[in-house]
Length: 144
Image (cartoon, rainbow, N blue to C red; front, side, top):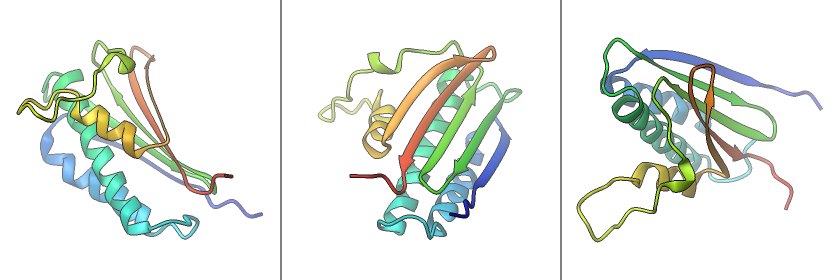
């Protein structure tokens, strides 16, 4: 089988004005995935959403809105999986200690991580090279 791998590596300034650009890149890639057996439009929406939420967390929380920092986004698509990694320079946190958001309250803390965990097949956050990496994977052609 001929593997067609797609790799996108982007670094943008730590500013919210780049959120829609990164989200749209992920969305456009997902819409073109002929190797995905499901609803490509729904996948595209989900990828835009998780990228946007991950970027917001990196910009506002990890990098503390510091405009001199960068956010690094890496996307890799193989025949089986879509992998997204978002790198930040923050102190990090335990992703499993974030409680689900209280949707009855106006406060939205934890909402982004909750959404990401609901939409992706695997999610992990770990220290790497003096910073942190949020890794999110979506199975494109998984065995039942």
